[in-house]
Image (cartoon, rainbow, N blue to C red; front, side):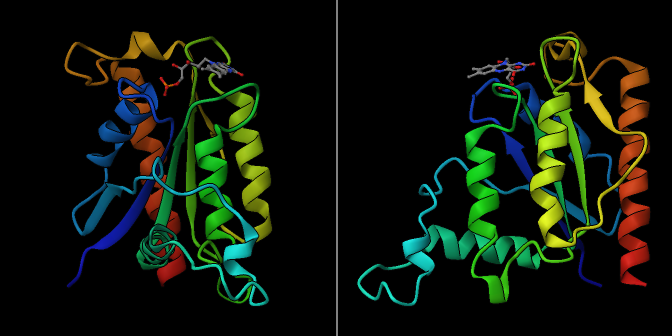
Length: 190
Ligand SMILES: Cc1cc2nc3c(=O)[nH]c(=O)nc-3n(C[C@H](O)[C@H](O)[C@H](O)COP(=O)(O)O)c2cc1C
């Protein structure tokens, strides 16, 4: 049987990103039968509807858009792990969401189950990014894991020198979220 793919989108382009470190930790929390992998978004050209506008015949759709949309469509579900920039989601993540949202007749996010993890170096755990992400996704009929929501505060304190989350209660909390995500995925597949 083929593994079920989970597309993991990281809302930060920084090399040492805590969002990326978190993503790499939770990728390992999926059960056998699942393959969770980061789908890179940092090199996606800035979204411009001219690319999808049938009246703009002289504009060619970027190959990276084609690849990205295919990667999302091929996934059983999408896991977002994001930082917060100026009280909303980082531009790289919004760009990826916009790219996946067109063309209307064949949008990549449609009905795709999702889970959201936000973090910040401060105490609020990326609350606004998490909520703004839910708002953007609400347009696509995506079933999203509900309670308890995941806002990881003081994120730098969670990792050891190898990037592993060493706070056991946080590991368990994240594992619980992934378990709920898998339950949601299995329900959708049934
Ligand atoms: C442009 C910019 C805006 C930021 N805005 C917020 C913010 O609104 N809320 C917050 O908690 N942290 C904010 N921060 C701090 C980030 O939480 C911090 O840089 C974090 O490490 C970024 O996540 P990363 O480690 O995954 O790259 C901001 C950082 C930058 C560079």
